[in-house]
Length: 272
Image 1 (cartoon, one colour):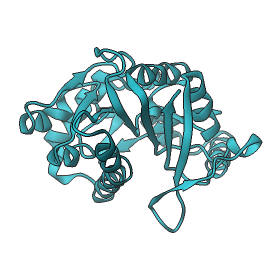
Image 2: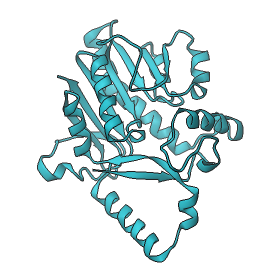
Image 3: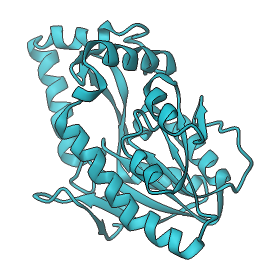
């Protein structure tokens, strides 16, 4: 199952005021290009939300410790990484600094101007993540961090098929979602929408929001992975009160639909 997400602002920028915003469609490359230009001009990239930055840097360290370091030790200098939907590159810059071979993909170039200047030899793909202009079996690890939500079900499956194509035999796809649809979120969303309809409240907020993407259950992620011939090796989730991603046993049957009770979930897929 998946539900539509709506958003009014991000990083202090009102999304409806960004050029290219269209309440009828999920934002694409043009919107994000204009958004990052607006963010740079109005707020400055040095004034990003502190909590958001901490989360990004924590995820970066976790991925490096859990995946990059042991894979580099096992594979050696041929170890190659592709990170999809990198945004400002907050997660990936430490890896580049530490000498990892990391290729980057983003739907627009404005957010990566500083990264491109600092790492002129880095390969950066600007365009659709579902169509990477690269030969098959090119990467040992592909990372998708907070990218899945911008794709509907059909496009998400296409994205996973493309990732599977790009992975070498025995390669790993790591998908991290910050919009996992658990039972608590589903119930609160349905209750909120019902209340708005019955009481006619929050109309101003609704009118100021835009379609932001999709929230889907763990089961939806796992099914999409199977269709792309990806085996779910491990599921990680944040468990209150800790913010660290920890491995959890993959549930069966109905528990897959609204489990775990966490907004941030990471799935380690192996290529079949």
